[in-house]
Amino acid sequence: MAGWRILSIVIACLVLFVVIEMMRRRKLREKYAGVWLVVATGVVVLAVVPSAALFLARLTGVETPSNFVFLLAGVVLALVSLHLSTEVGHLEEEVRTSVEETALLRCELEDAKRELVARIAELEARTTAPDNVNGLPEVERVSK
Image (cartoon, rainbow, N blue to C red; front, side):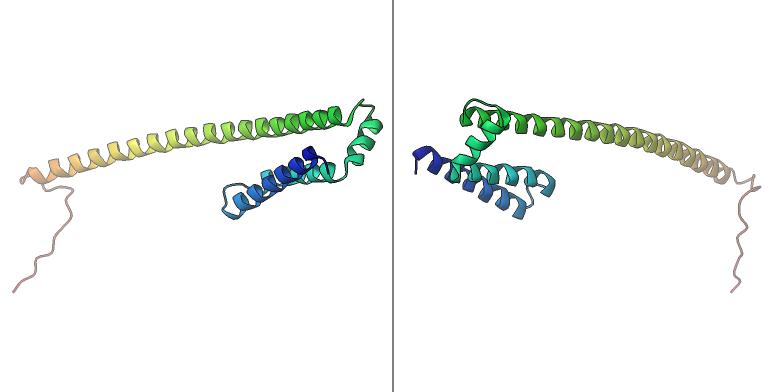
């Protein structure tokens, strides 16, 4: 077996191990791990069965199998980039919505604070003037 095939198999197996370990430790979500598992499996297949790369290169009209593998790698990277770009756009929208909701809640909190301060000031004004007992709750006196 050629040295590059052994190296390809070792690297692909290492990628498989790292992806599975990251999934086990909850460092990588399943939807992203699937892409990397497929890529690593594809590299193992192309390394173990080099005639598959030759067949696919001829099928697609690419001159050499190595050029086909580079083309395939470029397509995979472009697809991953496109997917991550859509994810970033979605996350930006969620952040914007969360910031707007936080701003609205902050305004509501400030309004509630102002209303509470006004009510406290009104009650203090009522209780500081002993001559003016209008509006204060009645207190029952207990006789002994």
